[in-house]
Length: 319
Image (cartoon, rainbow, N blue to C red; front, side):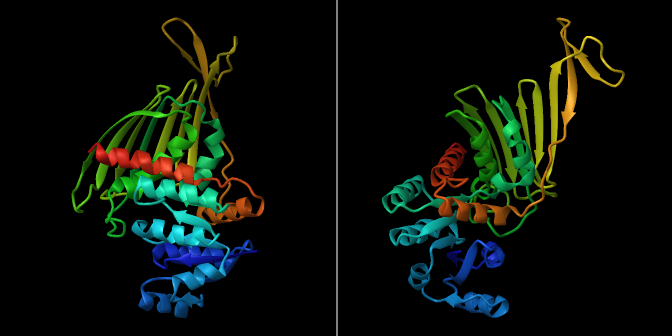
């Protein structure tokens, strides 16, 4: 079992603490929170050991799970990596590209592993169809959330849209060519609604919309590729896969056949991938343990987390 310590005991930090405490792959040593009142309260309520010194906790563990505000990700990760500790960092990886790139250098220098908490990679709906998404040419995403003051210290792109950016980059095997975007601040000092159009070198176009002041929650992505349409509902954990193939010479009574202007006939058929229920946060933490124990590559590497941040910051710059 890997000894693990958590930095940050806010809303998400408490979820990480509970899951790490339950996981057979980790031995939860304790946690650190700069707010001593909150730290002692969490310790009293849940029984986790509270460290009032960050260095003491880092020295005691093998893995440091960083669930602090983004501004402190770099400092926390650097402290841990320089002491030879593996790091799990919540998204976004850091506040700046320079910080993220330095963490990748530290990862190599100190022979440790790092993973970024892009949890939608572990969404069971996305996992069930990821291998079916091949060379998509148009992608449309909508990530809408009801207003919650938590997270409004950063633009909606870094709060919500970055989930979709990372998922898109994981299936589009091409460099970004151009980005056009617009954002509007409604209730926060930073944009609450944003739309971005990302054009890739291979011709793929992705249109992303994110809002944190919607009347209902929605997390949907649609992938269009040759002979297939794939829809992923990240919120409801549902997928829809519609494919086309050459129509049989003698169609069945219930076959759905389309014929284009040139007379070419195609048959539409549906696939129902098996969606296995899971706890995505637990899975991302446990696959990181597997990567450490088996000397494998984390599912979401620091480099991938950096690429998602790079695109997110380009979107913000183009507002």
